[in-house]
Image (cartoon, rainbow, N blue to C red; front, side, top):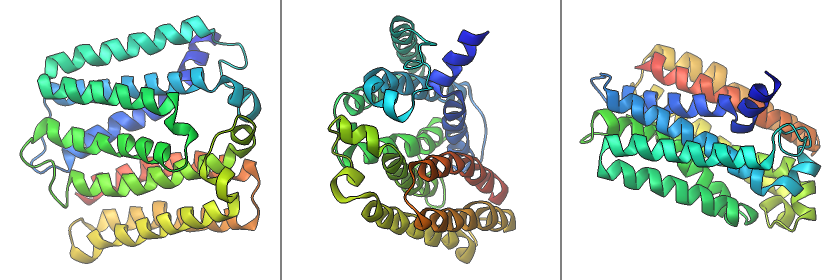
Length: 282
């Protein structure tokens, strides 16, 4: 049982569920919502890619994680390198098989995701902004994939999957920069050129704050325009926007890595509230 729990921690099962739900919400926002087998295939494929990406991240970050996250399954010895590599290969293979059931374009998308995740973990995560942006695009892309699965002629509409993509892109981008602030000690020792290493945690927090202020302003547009209903306004302001403002104030007080780690964790839960806001609004 302990190894099962360790494996679930390795793939970050909660992240995989959130990614799959992003696909579902993207489909839901596309218009006249209806489910198809394709939608669930895409949801499962994205969840598998998310899990594979998390495994690869830990495989390539063992030295850094011994400093930043020593209790993770691989540095703590709860999961062996060989077992982690099997999970990575198996999840990617299963995602490709699902893509084959969806058609040629989906195969290209899934393979593109696999290559982007590989390049990110191989080298791009060591660079300022580029790696953060790639992760943000892939995370937010779940909404577009969900929309495309049920309405390939309207996935780009606003309001709709594209609006959720823009919101999620900013949200993920800001969270990735916060995680860089949390991981600054290990990143500096290993020679990673992340933004806080290059310009300081304080300067990076200013960029993070700017990104989230932009996001908060944009989340108000659907309320002003009437794109979404009352439920969206209540949930997005009360459960996303206000908590983000509180978290930014919490981070301004000091630049403790523990504060940044706690904030990154809390933001993960705010993602789920954001998904719920879109559902309630439509």
